[in-house]
Length: 136
Image (tube, rainbow, N blue to C red; front, side):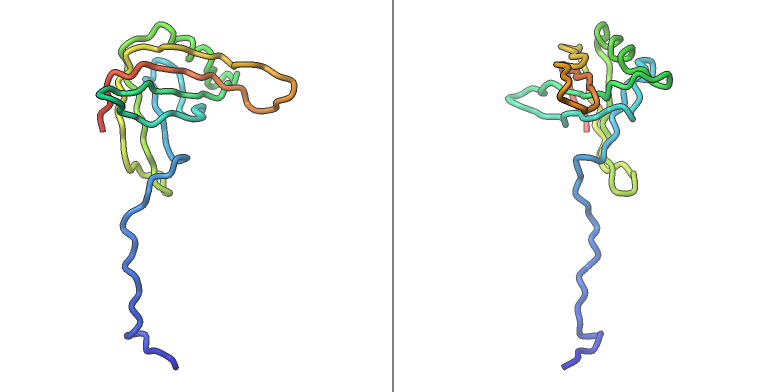
């Protein structure tokens, strides 16, 4: 028994898209020299017990003339009161959400953790920053 196409109800087109954790851009102030493409991960803003939780960033430790992150990360040791932004993107690279994160100071920088002959992953620089405020 065949149905006429007029009788078949097609679902409405989807007008929303959930955010996906691997579609983001993190931007540091230009003068710090930390380019977005070396960012491996960042913690999304988190509000706990009346205050913003620390922001944690992991950078790929790439020693390259184009963007030497160790020097840029070292600059962070003395930086206070700066802003970073996280942009959540859709599949086409269009910004879905944008967060401005006000950083009070850098709490710690780990320039590589434990080195081991048994691992072959890209070495990372992990940065923990005290978050003053976040704006959506």
